[in-house]
Length: 95
Image 1 (tube, one colour):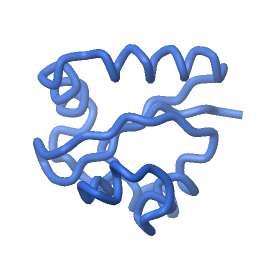
Image 2 (tube, helix red, strand yellow; image 1 turned 180 degrees about the vertical axis):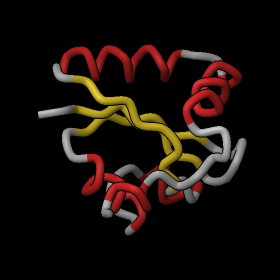
Image 3 (tube, one colour; image 1 turned 120 degrees about the horizontal axis):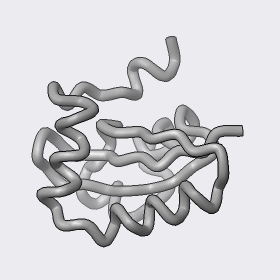
Image 4 (cartoon, one colour; image 1 turned 60 degrees about the horizontal axis):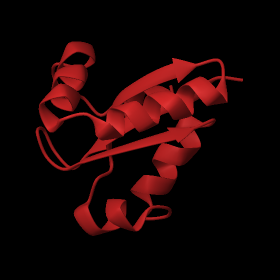
């Protein structure tokens, strides 16, 4: 079962949220519906802009913790390299 480290954004270069899940589609949907993290609801962080799969939950959690400690510029660079248009990747999950 894949595990995902993901980043949500309120808008391009907006507020960011880093999380980890074993069901990216379900978790992104929960965030969109206002369920889950209070931070996400408070700041409108619902746009899925980055997702990184891992085979082992320990690796995913370790990567999530690393990214959370990164400077904002590094997070923005990570998103830009994978998703330069800042598309909402949630739209691709349910196709």
